[in-house]
Amino acid sequence: MTVTGPPARVYACACLECQRATGSGFGYRARFSRQAIASIEGERRIWRRNGSSGRWVDQTFCPTCGTLVYMEAEALSDAVVVSVGCFADPEFPPPAAVFWASRRHTWYDLAEGIETFG
Ligand SMILES: [Zn+2]
Image (tube, rainbow, N blue to C red):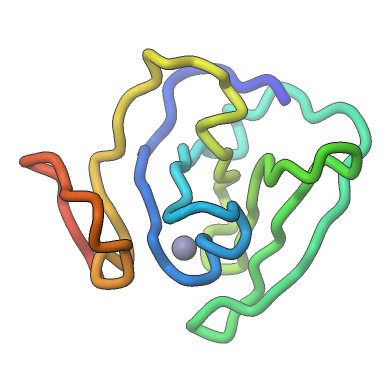
């Protein structure tokens, strides 16, 4: 996947679905507008699930290594949400918000200034 320009939003999500999908305590994601997606190449496998709102969420994985690369959602029709780890860029901007903060594991504290929802 190649993106152009900065993400519209960088966030973490600690909902239980993101915990299951990543095998970690939270998803760390960057939302881009569809216009910012220059290309998507290579094999991929999509798993559709329903979000807590009942609307669909498509999670796209690499079929070789199982990495969750990006997500698309019925509720975000103009966006593609990319797993930040896929950029392999330690300088990538930090999350500005944590969704489902109430479900995050108790061992990590949030940095000051991060918005929390849920
Ligand atoms: Zn989530």
